[in-house]
Image (cartoon, rainbow, N blue to C red; front, top):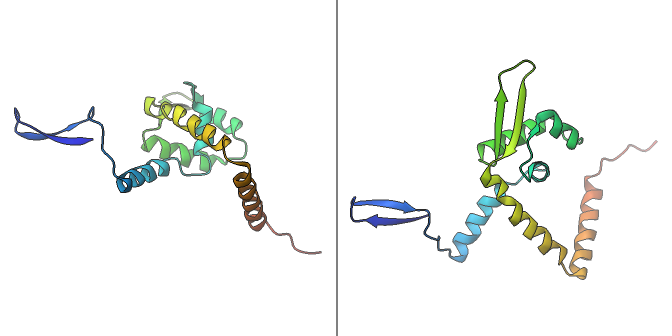
Length: 149
């Protein structure tokens, strides 16, 4: 948002419709802030389950993402709600009913993430091969070690 002096009110006002001008430094900083909103092992998985206007209950998300714990799912949803990406609707009934859906801003991530997926698919073969080798080495280092018998 840009700030502009408004003569009539003699105040600075923010103009949302004015395009923000970026320098390489401010562009990088703002993009890093945006990517931090999506950090976390499960946030993108949750996003892809909710894209398309889907409304899912907590238990539906648990079933859709079997590897996630209840605690982690709750933490990720709470963070996404605080960031304005997910909307939580709680119904006052027994048993409790809570539904999650994307906000319009959260839904607007779909084309951006789709563009990133298409960009990644165009990765040159020699770069992809190096990345896969690096990922396999990292996974091997992170794998739990079993004690020799």
